Length: 298
Image 1 (spheres, rainbow, N blue to C red):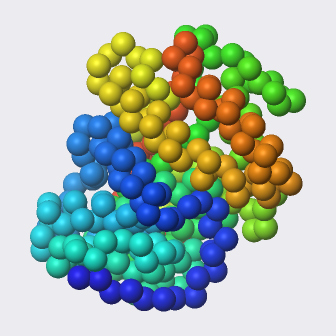
Image 2 (image 1 turned 180 degrees about the horizontal axis):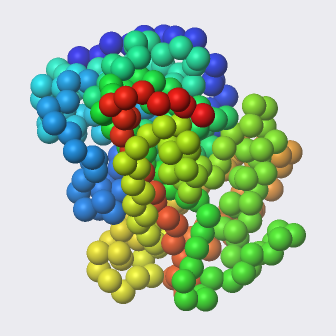
């Protein structure tokens, strides 16, 4: 069952694709992160939740899978676009809604669990979103954030160093730096590197029992460990499938031509596929509980 509510959508300048091809990629990405998290959809103690919210639901796959685990819960997925499937469990509802709006559709203290995922580069203030989630959680209930840090890392020296002037030997460095620049120059600005800051923001807002889990996600199949190699296979496919869509609007905003973007992305794809470079990115899972007694948010 689907209920579509068209609210004041102020974020129509969302910089990434939302077509059918992108929805297929999001499902693939969901599978990859389930491998990373050993099959888990969430990491907090849930005791017969009645109201669950998924912000930025995308293809809707997370609420649909949660509906199997919690058939008595009303599970709501929100997104800027009505692109979710029509054949869904009866306890799943999708709303077209902008979570950055000043006022949400629900009263305060409404939800037993809120899940937020993959908001990198999507909004001006992720901390503001966390504050709204705090308001709308019931006292004692949990927020869980899933977010990738897009800065490439390496532990064994196989990744060429970053060139601060651009034109790095490993082009993924430059791709990250260009995104940081593009997200700061667009109006309104968008936060591109949020994952390492979520834990601190949640504590500042007033969440308690805040826990941060960090998982390594290899860029490609360079690991020798079979599990990590399998994750790397999905990661490489995810990157190659998403790269153009993640790049065009931000780089056009920097004044690049489409030809310049395509030439640059050739080098980025080579870096993504280079198995001699043992690069990875950190995937953050951050959880926190709204205290039973309200505290002042920052």
